Structure formats: structure tokens, C-alpha cells
Length: 88
Image 1 (tube, rainbow, N blue to C red):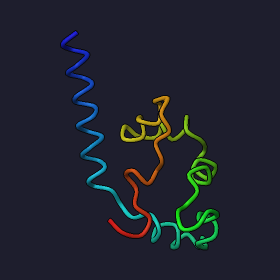
Image 2 (image 1 turned 45 degrees about the horizontal axis):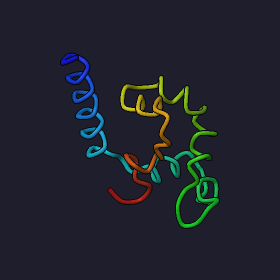
Image 3 (image 1 turned 45 degrees about the vertical axis):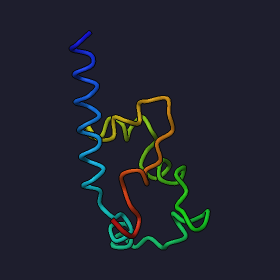
């Protein structure tokens, strides 16, 4: 039981650290030639479903790196929790 709690706390700590080290995604997408309207179909925020569509879906993203493993939860965790569009 202690091991489960330790792993849970360790996972949450890693997730929290990754959120504080969040990158802004707008310049990355603009460098690839994408226009604002590609992500911002619902103003002023980007549409979370567009993120998932372009990046291969929740399951593929969850497998892509350890920080994205939070997407395996039943909760809907929008990308903007960690990734900021234009400001840190």
C-alpha cells in the first residue's frame, strides 16, 4: 500500500514539475506555417479536440512521453493545463 502511495505522489510530482516547465506552443505551430484559425476555432481559446485530432488522439499522445501519461486518466485534461499558447 505504501508503495502505491509513493508511486502516486512521485507521478503527481513529476506531472507538476512538467507543468511549471511548460512551453508556449504558438511559436512552434506558427513556425510550421499554421495559421491561428487552425487551433482557434472556438475563440479565444484553442479547441482541445483540434489538438487531439492533429496529434493523433488521446491514446497516442499518452504513449508519446511520460508527461502525457496523465491523458490515461478518465478525467479530461486539456492541453492548456501544461502547454500555454502564447504566454508562460
